[in-house]
Length: 189
Image 1 (cartoon, rainbow, N blue to C red):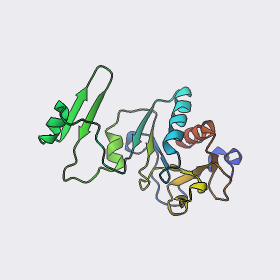
Image 2: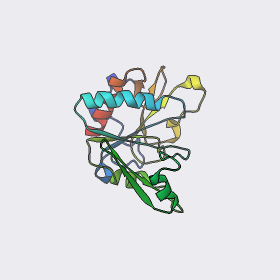
Image 3: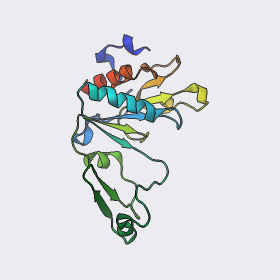
Image 4: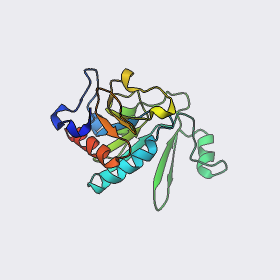
């Protein structure tokens, strides 16, 4: 199904399953998912640029599958965390960042993370494939990885660099403007 042929009122809002509104937690959220190496971040970067040009304020949440640390051993903030602080905030003249240690707590869900963010027009989410927000799957069959959409009802469209025979809107992976327009229409529907 081509997106150009899809009227706004027929956007697939839930594919018949339990999909929460993109406006849950007081934030509009829309996700991008797909197997590693399909180009999610590169696409997201371009989509963000288009949405900002359209006048939207945008924030993003990126799920990292492996542990990461933005702090450096030996720095004061690192030493405070290592001493046992649950949260440490770094503040500079250009930005601030709040680091929170989970210690023995489970990783927070997307709803809690969204509730911690300042209000913006739209929060774009990379990863969190099992979260109940609408998502576009970034898919390249040439990489030989299985698609997620057949088993994930939260995927409402697929962005690919080739033609696919699917029952979802098919977006051109090389046309970030088209994808930004789809997200805008979907979120505002």
